[in-house]
Amino acid sequence: MISRTLSDKLKYFAKLYPVISVTGSRQSGKTTLVKQVFANYKYFNLEDVDIRNFAITDPKGFLGNAGNGMILDEIQRVPELFSYIQNIVDESDKTGQFIITGSQNFLLMESITQTLAGRIAILKLLPFSNFELKKANLISDNFRTQIFKGAYPRLYDKNIPPKDFYPFYIQTYLERDVKQIRNISNQNTFIRFIKMCAGRVGQLLNIANLANDCGITQVTAKSWLSVLEASYIIYFLQPHSKNFNKRLVKMPKMYFCDTGLVCSLLGIKDKNQVQPHYLYGALFENFIINEFQKFFYNNVIEPELYFWRDKNGKEIDLIIEMQNKLMAVEIKAGETFVGDYFKNLKYWNKLSGNSEENSFIVYGGKKNLKTSNGELFSWLNISGITDKINV
Image (cartoon, rainbow, N blue to C red):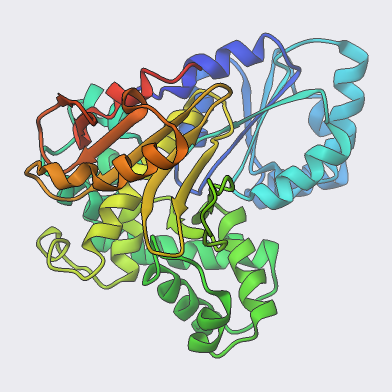
């Protein structure tokens, strides 16, 4: 098993809370992780019809099998269990009793907030980070290969070619996750909608245009976007609100939790088709921002990630907000450093009063350099930036 950064946090919170939730996209490795960390716990998958029927018809008897601890996989399939779990943990006051997992953040969180508030630690697991792949010597030194392949564990564990993984992933996602969250009758239109979202990766989200292009209402588009977000297919980067006396855009930008999935939806069949694609820069941007997203989730911190853009098109790709400072990151797919990379950072620093020591470039090359305008980091070494974040 490839070591997951979240393992230590999982063990830590199991000593503090009676229930631990691990949520994240389907096939991100949740089951493998919790079974490895809690090897002596009894495991039950509620996708199994027989197990699910037992849990529904006799919840007390089912939960009576907990013993030293119980892993309940895809628990959102039986939301009735949450009230019984609440009673058990309140009576026993024992930590680490139940480890629950789910691929549907919306359904899972709805049940958690109703019954387990204050009794549960909520952890999120996305597909492999570059840091995890580097430790396992599984990362390519070509970022285009990584963008195309994506980071889902089965691609590495079973050596499945991306072209043989993602189409079935999408099909499984539609059959399981979407039907549980929303009753979407026209799956062909929904698939077209997902593909249109992929074509807008890294761009400002104009819901009206997206809905019109797909032939659906804005209400439907908003509903479908919430489905994609709740099941960890997409996420949004909001514009940083402090305007520094400049008019700012107010629309968010949309990204996918995995670039391999984006490539599949865009019809990219080979890693060599990544660079000529019109979304090449956006794919690299998505790839890098995902790494920051994973860093925060792996440290059990809700990411405070934004972008900044004024009405004149001046932009900072990523703003990381912390208690006492802002970190600004520009993302460039070029493999050779040019001084012009720092142009927007210099503009934003002058406007905001931010310092060069909190200004960074992540680019497609392999050198790390310190300059008078900020630091330059290779895509392989963004830990040079995350190490500066207090977690």
